[in-house]
Image (cartoon, rainbow over all chains, first blue to last red; front, side, top):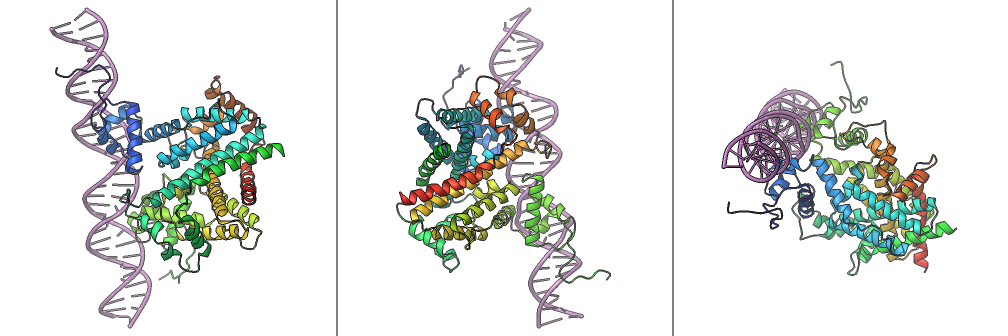
Length: 237
Length: 237
DNA sequence: CCTATCAGGCGTACTAAGTACGCAAAACTG
DNA sequence: CAGTTTTGCGTACTTAGTACGCCTGATAGG
């Protein structure tokens, strides 16, 4: 009798709070962000929520459904192309937003492909992008190419960025597996490559990729603009 | 005594043959191709090889190592950029080859990212590609962009192609999960999209994507050429 | 206020899957 | 042919997903 609450209890993730589908999905995303997808289990998620494993199944049909929901949540973080902006700018922003969502949630990248159900957010997203491309006055076949190229690039870029990110974060979470890729990728460049076997690779790494100002991410905007330009040119010629 | 063999026994995958790392990896790839990555377990692989689960561990350190090895095998199927050809043509072929390998082994795509160890084949591959780009006379910063864009595009494209492929294969392997995405994606376009909510999407699908001659794959070469052109232009201007 | 109903949380327990450990047969070596 | 190494594997433990059904607290009538 000492405790009375109507429906909005004070938020407290680590233990209590009311269980619900959204909370489960959101906490799933948090956990995957923090510890990686491998350590997201029904049991660990339940523990994080201060609940017992079987309780989650009241709000999520299965682990697959959980993952689907989490992916849709990530997609929801990507701003759809705005109808207000000039179409190229709208596309640019959409792509950058998508990329950032995937950088925040790199575990979602492999799932984007394998999860079959499109999910409501993904549809809204496609719709907005197609609308922007249509506003650009491109012919339909050209829209198709533009869309294929842009999305391929965004996803592929995010994939590589995630890969590099994992390789570069030396002091971060270096205990997930037995493999310590940190040293293998970052430090031992010369150890693996010093032979005459990979001269270009070694030169590229030492003279460019390992230089102070280098940022893989800088290629992103270059790529988007390049594709946008190329597609425009396609439509004309 | 009735059976005598020196080292090359008649090949017979389903049951006997000598166990070895290569055989295990190759059979793993076959199994993943046939039944999908989810149904590739140490136990199923052992059964396929006519062996018992623990036997595989003599030739593969762990399941993770198995997956690494399988991925490296897929990468080995991608022809490195040839040093004989004109550089753009060499790049084009390399990319097309990579794409085809990933179409043959779509399960490898999500793994490309998550597997941390580069693997010997990947290094050889990068080396050849950088060599070709260098032969093109591009400045180093431009090579970096070119490489980032090309690889992002290839991987991302393969990802989408795999996604679409799974959605389109109606009569193929439609029993993997409880979800039958075949109908959901292919047939019920109007069921999901008929509302006024997704006009562009519906128009795009019905007027273009569902037309007889449409092929998503056709965008691939367009994309590669577009990137190659764009990068060349970058280097000049 | 008392009871029927219902939904949410959970205990139990089964299954699938990775794999540590160490034995034993086979292959190889001297 | 004896010793050593390589290979295959039986056993068994662990982690993880989840089917099934109980229990409890909240809610709705009477």
